[in-house]
Amino acid sequence: MSNITRRQFVKRTAAFGAVSAIGFPSLIRAQGLNEKLQVGFIAVGGRAGTHTDTAHGEGCQCIAFAETDKGRWGGVLEKEGWGQAKGYTDWRKVFENHGKNLDVVFVSTPDHTHFGPSMTAVSMGIHCYTEKPLTWSVREAQLLAAAYAKNPKVVTQQGNQGHAGNGWRFAYEYIKAGAVGDIKEFHTWTNRPIWPQGGDRPEGSDPVPASLDWDAWIGPAPMRPYKGNRAYHDFNWRGVVDFGSGALGDMACHTTDGIYSIMNPGYAATAEPFIMTGPVKDQWPAGMVVKSTYRAKDGRPGFKTFWYEGVDGNGRPFMPDTPEELEVDGRQLPRTGNLIIGSKGKMLVNGDYWETPLIIPETRRKEFGRPPQLLERSPGHHKEFFMACRGEKPREFSQSNFSYSGPMTANIQLGNLCARAGKKLELNEAGEITSDPAINALAWREPRAGWGPLEMKV
Image 1 (cartoon, rainbow, N blue to C red):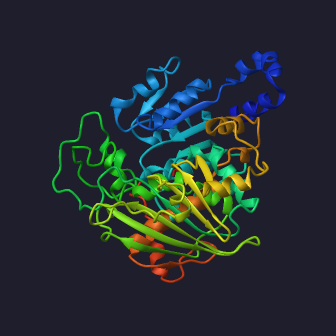
Image 2: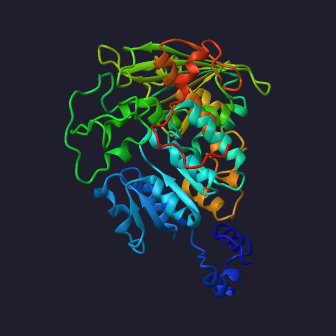
Image 3: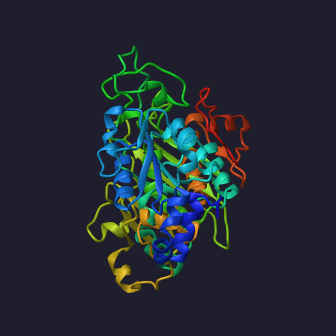
């Protein structure tokens, strides 16, 4: 028993039940173990606050965290029982100093700094929850999927909480029941961006705030001067190519999630910038439409997807036309959602998270009725992750794990990649670009010296 690790102990106590944990308190103390999951956070401000709150509510113990802006450290240190957690501005210190004691890590940094800590965690055998989009680039997403396969004891989850909802499950059951026939097209649109896009790099520099570690914030990206007025930190980085993934990276992991859940499509066969308001500069374009095609698979025909974001030169949102099946009910398209076009009908999905899939028009919906339930429902996005981490469920119970979210994110970032390339791309089934192999170089960015993963087992 002397070689038991904390992670093995947590799994065993979950398997034996609470009685065994109560029956052997001396064993716990002798081994320096604790039945609570020991968690670390890479970022604790902004969106990360959801994860610190949830982990605290789940009874986890935070032992270390990294946050480049010390003004946000209260997100951990002010929580009851977490005041002794060790804080850093550099995420690498969390793993170097505490990696052997961590059970779980949450990564909620800007997009460009997701890969390093996520790959390090998985490679060190630490369960990992990473915010969407899983990665900044196509190749990073593929590598994290490979790392998940290589490290079979690690539980992972991407932060697209709608995947735990019932909406896409209802849509799946409608489609499998034949409500719209064979799927021909998915049209997905968003009300993003709500931050600047379409611009050039700002000139000059400003003093770095005393609370901010700018070198750590830049991380693997090319170094550039700090600019104030939120040009980058703490929000508008989303529209900057070096740091964010634009509207596509921000929202497609939510709004296109049902496509990947329902169709299990593999990698796209083609991706092209169908419409762009201008070339990619320091920021992503102000608006664009991306068209992708997917191969026939598992007895179903191939299909197309269309992604709409931003506005055209006249300020009009890029969206599909309202279908006549909706007009007959006196309705218009919502500002964000999905339109599914099949060989026998159409379905409308309202909102970002596949909340309410509806066959249209209403007369057709009433005629078809409710399909039979085919899929198990989730206890909740964070709940399924923690249950798998504790060993109460198998690791695949955390359903937006990296085997699912890795290829999904790679396909999403392929839309941004074809925008950067400015042309249609063709890919093989392994996700490699074949029409212009030189573009594969854009699918990966070599991290700035010292800011790559500390370990990489793929």
